[in-house]
Structures are given as C-alpha cells and as structure tokens.
Length: 241
Image 1: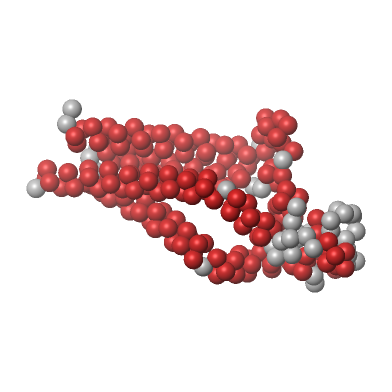
Image 2: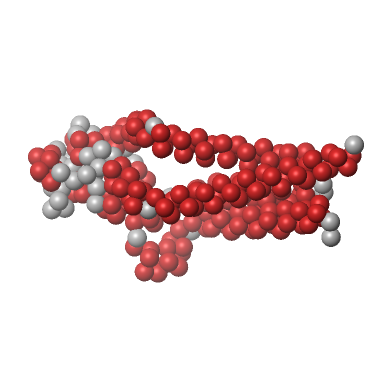
C-alpha cells in the first residue's frame, strides 16, 4: 500500500467518524427540540439538573450539521479524489481554526474587552427580558442557582428592570444569601452575592488545564486534517501535471 493510498484511507475513515458523530448530534438535537420531555425522562435522576433549561437542541443541530458537512466533504473529496471538495474541506477547517485562535487570543489578551461584549448582551437581556421571556428566565435562573450567583455583574443588573418593577422592587431570590421569595436591593447589597461572570471565570481558572488540553487536542486534530487534505490536494495536482 502506497503512502497516498494509506493517507486517502485514513482520510476516509477519519471523516466517516466525523460524519457519524455529526449525525448522532443532529438526531439528538432534533429529538430534544421535538420531544424534550421523553429525553429528560431518559436522563432519570439527572433530569432535575439545571442544564435541562438550556435549549441544547438547536446547539446540537448546528454543530451536528457542520460536522455532517465536513464529514461528507472530507469523505467524498478523498474517495473521489476531487480537488474542489478537498479544497473546500481545507477552507472550512481553516476558517474554524482561525476563528478559534482569534477567540482564544481575545479571551486571554483582551479579557476586559470580551467581558464588555458579553455585558453589552447580557445586561439588556436581564433588564428587559428576564421575568417576561420564559427561555431567558429559565436560562438565567438555572445559571444563578447552579453557580450561586446573581446577574452578570451582580444584583445591580436587575435594578430598574421589568422584573423589579413588576415585583414591587423585589429581585430574584438568588441575589440574597437567604434565598427568600422577597429579596430587596438592600438585602442583596448586604448579601454581596457575586455575579455569574466572575464565578464562570473562577471555574475556568480552576479547570484551566482541562480546558487548555481539550482546546489543544481540537487544534491538533484540525491541523492534522488540514495537512492531510492539502497533501492529497497537492498529490493530485502533481499526478495531473
């Protein structure tokens, strides 16, 4: 078996796994979106976890769709020895890789800038949608309960919000250490419950090695996929010439 044939076979097998993984995620995302109740029953004791409130269905569908597309492009490109498909596969993986590197650089070198972007999205959502939009409300309630936090920065994110006005000046129970049904701004100030963003950063720092290892592993796989696809592309070009 020649080097080209071996690389081609590995490309087909690797992308077949990507395709099957994408199909699995796609099917799970559709299942969760269409019949979330039965999916939660399948989880049994884990169904009470706060993650059930996060709509993972559309996320799984999006990721699964991208993986299915990549798997098809890589498989068909290698099997049919199509330069066009291989180049498309390489380009998509390269775009994903660049986006991940850019996001990592922003997160590490410009954490304050990243925090500002997140705050620009989170704070208006808390002020206008929390308590009125069921999806936003469930998502933030589960986050605040699981992480023992209040708002994005702290309780001040809820001051002047629709939720505070509709509840007679009361804030979400998570903003007070006592977790009473009524939580005034004064009680929240005395409780000094930290914001969710600070807690998330703390968790990420505690698990930095795991996060870094996973990110590095994904980056290595992406680079390997680009190298293999470009090797096949150049080999085909040399054979044609």
